[in-house]
Length: 253
Image (cartoon, rainbow, N blue to C red):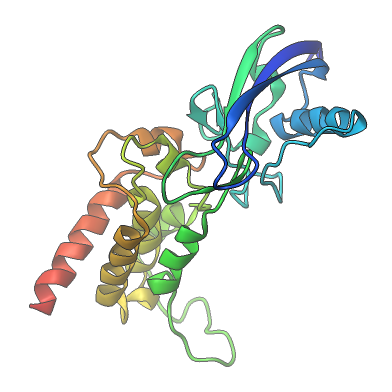
């Protein structure tokens, strides 16, 4: 693949802290390789800002391999940028053209307050997981993998749901800032497996209650969450979540 150099104009959201009003600042980024990742391009810009004595742009990152879900940016209006099924760290600059103006913002949701610049606080997701996104098991030696049979279709569906990395793109993409795709993926992963059966009913009730407490919006089935999810989690999980919740609610009466 041919490499080429690009000159870009970045319009980046700058916000000192959660209470700051925030604003956009424009930067010219010259001689960017088309084979850089988007985060590497931000790194280059930050090195130049630091060299001039300016405050670098704060952004989240960790694995840079599409695994951790930390690289939460809205790029030209789309969470994680223009490539489908791709995290920001996997997005390469060849997705853009020389001379492009690129707008970069943090994920926007009341439940994800901005910490600084492009960094948001997604601990709301952690609190949802703490209410039920786990199974209780006895300690000791690991159970043999073949000890509990699981149907192939259920194993595949559970594995697909477990691919959710909790990045929050579904929330950022939703006009209501709903977390239903995230919660449904976590509920589906465990609801489909026999290991999740003992706590099945209480899990879904607790996780939805916490989701509502955190201030996430409701789902109106626009499917924007599925379209922008870097792991392409299916909205069919939301249907399963609703069935699990209804069943648990009726069983409690």
